[in-house]
Length: 208
Image 1 (cartoon, rainbow, N blue to C red):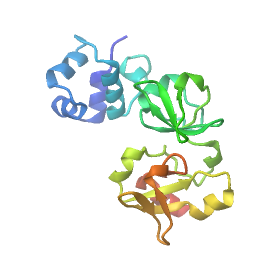
Image 2: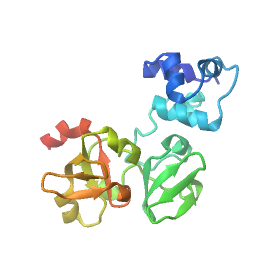
Image 3: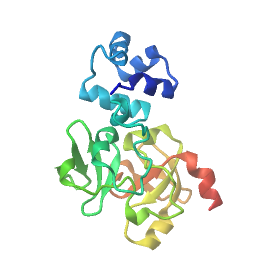
Image 4: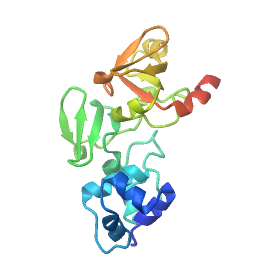
């Protein structure tokens, strides 16, 4: 099947030169991938998928579905793990973990590391948080937090009252997020005690 590297770039609406710069490769290298004269490494393929916002299957021409996180209420298809690099995922048996797509491992909040293939049921959103008032988009990665001035925070807890009390909009500081009454969540505990969602959903949240 034909590779879809160029199509993914066009969907991103970015030039060859700009895409090469963002991907950390030379323009001739990216051009050779798009023309299928050469093949990118696995690491480069993952970077492309993440940057373009598509799946690796889409890039390889194995799927027409570009969005890797469309059905975040459903268990993650194991084949999508490579495009979820550094994304928090939830295991009903072990809790939150970050994906390392390069090594195909999951790094859990308690320090444990397991091969992604060992867990058959993973979610973008924890089932305990699956309710109508939760933002309808995947959680931000820890590295994305600094890009926002304000984020919607969902505490990770089985205590419904505690979640209801602490959830809401928080201002992003250097090492933590803080709400208007001074409650804080520190970056060091991201993915273990809390998750954040983008400001794009604020208007919807205010209407709930």
